Length: 280
Image (tube, rainbow, N blue to C red; front, top):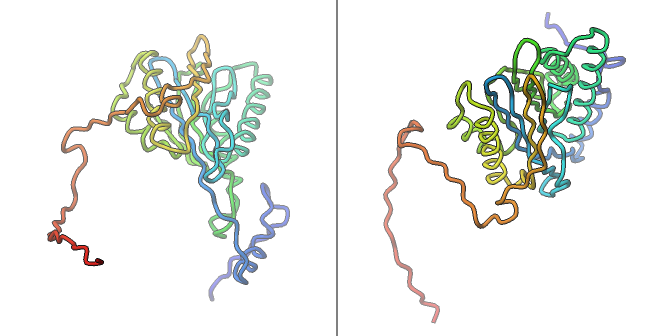
């Protein structure tokens, strides 16, 4: 006998999705469901010997409209742990506030500095929980927060990349957002393990410039945070030259022949035919 899957949404933790079936039925009757809009962001982070450099642009978009030119995407969680966010601005602000408050309470209760892995665990459990029952119902939403969490604690320096579903991965460098396609090419080309603080800062800035230059939804200015065991330094907003005079700068992307593997080739033969004006 086939088993039927049923669940009760009453009293479920997280968001209330009790109207989902109603919304799906109304959509089948001809009503238009809300459209998903693409948000624009470039966030970048890279590790160096003993610390982490993180940065983000400051442009927030609403569809094809620039809604905010000074949106803060670099959030302080503790004195030595920060996160950069891509996705929905309201979700990012609230998730960062929740993490900051919980980490501060833990520090006060334990008398010790919070660890980066603790912030990552809190964030991934929160995001996975509020993903809700998306695997059962296609149109259910979730918290749109794609995070880069980095910092320094008594055990060392760390950088984690996290999706809005709660999947996390430790990385030496990372980039997220609509401008990450251009930014990650700079990181992959120029990143070096155990690099100096100056090299890491310059690398993050170049990657942000590439994302801001190549993505219309990223731009205006950038903010940086340099996290080291002894201190944390925040810099910004920094306005790149091309944001003021875009016609005077061209970023170069030089890759050696053979960098990209050619999987398939196709030749197209055609003839050039000259047309004659016979209207007169």
